[in-house]
Length: 105
Length: 167
Image (tube, rainbow over all chains, first blue to last red; front, side, top):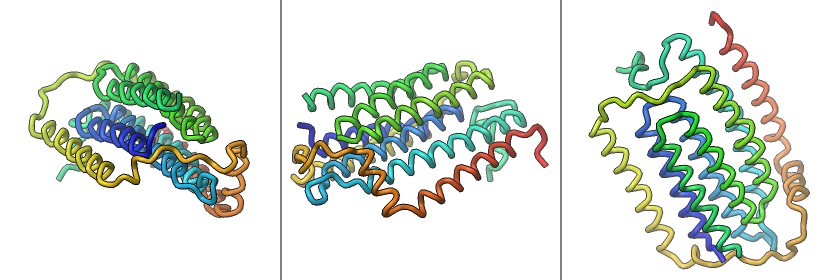
C-alpha cells in the first residue's frame, strides 16, 4: 500500500518541477502552464491528507470541498490570465518575458 | 495493486511534467501537461476521490488546456527562440528547487507518522459525490455562492480585457 510520504513526495516533485518551469522558462504561456502545475500539486497533497486523516472512520470531506473550490478559482484565473496575455500580445507583439520589462525599476 | 497503480501514474505524472519544462514547442508542452493532469486524476482515484478526479479531467485536462491550446494557436507561437542562458538566474532557480526538495524529504522522513499505509474506511461503499454535496451545502454554503459571483466577475473581466480598444 502506498504511504502518505509517497503521495507527499510525488506532490512535492510536481511542485518543484512547476517552480523550476516558472524560474527557468522565458515564454509567458509556459510560465502560466507551470503555475497551473503547481496548483495541481497542492491539490494532490490536500486529497492525500483527506484520505489519510480519517474522521469517525470515514475520509475527511472538507479538503475535497477545498480542492473543488481551488479548481473553480483556477479555471477563472486561467481565463483572466489568458485574456491579459492576449491583450499584452496585441500591445507589444511578444510573449517573451525578457522583452516585457516596462515596469522594471 | 494500489501500490503499482500509484507508482505507474506518479512516474507518468512526473515524466510528463518534466516534458512541460524541457520541450521547446508550446503545443508539445500543452499536450504533455494534459497527460500529466490525466495521470494526476488517476492518482485521485487511488485516493478514493473519484469526484475530484473526474472534475480534474473535465475542468483541467478538458476546458483549461483547450483554452491554452486555443491561445497558443491564436497567437501563432513558434518554438521559443534559444537565447543566451542567464547563468546566474539558472543556477539560482535550480538551487531554490533543490533546497525545497531537500527540506520536503527531511520533513517527510523525520517521523514515522508519514509512513503508515492507507487506513481502511469504516464504510467504503458510501457515495463520494453525496458526501461532498452534503459538506458543501451544510458547511460551505456561503463560499459556494461567493464562487458564483467570482465566476461572473471573471467572465465580465475577460470580456472587458478582450475588447479591441481599452478605454
